[in-house]
Every structure is written in C-alpha cells, then in structure tokens.
Image (cartoon, rainbow, N blue to C red):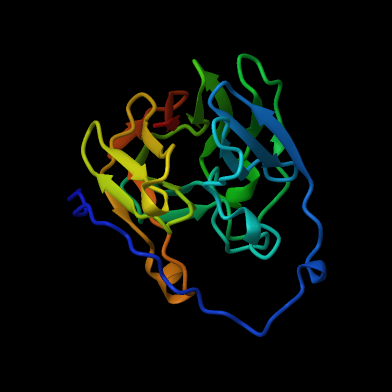
Length: 246
C-alpha cells in the first residue's frame, strides 16, 4: 500500500443548500466526559464524538460541533466511525462502513474505559468480525480503540481499516504517513493549543485521503487508513488513535 503524500488541507467551501433553521433537525442526545486534557461528548445512540474541547481553552471545539445536528444522518462520517475492506478465502474484497445505515450500538460495560460498545450491527449483514469500540483515558490523552475479533471459521484478510478524522480544518491539517505517522490539526492564526493524533498500538498511517464520494458531496475529511493484516479464526487485533493536546 503506497502512503498518500502529506499535504496541508485548506478549508473547503461546503456546498450549501437553502437555509434551514437548526430547529428543523431532530435534537441529538449526548453524554459529557472528561480527561485531564479534554472535555468531550459522545452521542448516546452511536457513541461517536460530538465535541472535543481542550481543558485549557474550552472556547474551541476541534470537531464540527456547530453542524452536528445537520450531520447526524446516514452517510455522514464522524470520529468514532470505521470503514473496513476485507475478504475471506481469496474471494472478492468487500467494503463495510458504520455510517452508511446506522443501527443502535450495543453498550458494553466500561471496564478500564470511559465508554464502550459493540458496533458490529452498524456494518450491516455479512461482516465476519465482531467490532468493539472503546474511549479510554490514557494519562490525560483520549484514546479511540477498536478491537476486531474474527468470529468466523476462516481467516479474514483486512486490506484497509479507515478511521475518519472529522475536524475543523480552518487552521490547516498536516499528515505525516508512516509506521509512526501523525496528524496535526492547527488552529487559525497559530492559536494554542493544537491537536495531535498519533497511533494507538499497531496502527500505521498507511494512507491519508478523503474518499471520492465524500469529495463529491462537498466535504473534504480524510481518514486515517491502516491495514495489511490477517486475523485467524478466533484471533483479535486492536487498532486506534490517541488524541493529544499540544
């Protein structure tokens, strides 16, 4: 897999429809959490991220918080979503995504985690894996960790696992692909603090680019894409990201 060249992503004009009052959208229920570095919130139905604010500057949200109600519907990516490209037995590659047609997540006991859920149902029928997602406080940093478990009787080849980074791009976003790759999210006019995203465990940044269908819809939010591994029957693997205040 060839890493995508790192670039500064300039703000992109979002294709706007006719003005719609925010009150026209259904209200979103969220739950607030915190670490020593972050104040954040998760949607109660999907457990995806709806706010990410540094404790040192509560006025700034690194997510698209003001557009959360507008972007709550199927097809919109959020931090905490996941895409998978995999196959079994040398067959055709299959693509799965948690945001295409959402299903309620199954909340799990939050053992050594702030929040946990089984998100397998959101991928739709045919997924040979169980996928669990946890939000973890690691010495103040926020960790987003997925556990992929092969519950089938055949090996599962995972070509790509994509974690969308839906962030405010007004200050620029810079990606440095590689085994120890990082993504830096800056703020306008050099304001501090900034956001640094780095791997959790074996999660190299193999590719960094927005999917074609997302660009066509007027958004430009790349995913952290990792992959190139095989899960034997019954095996599991953790992948994920650290969100760090810089």
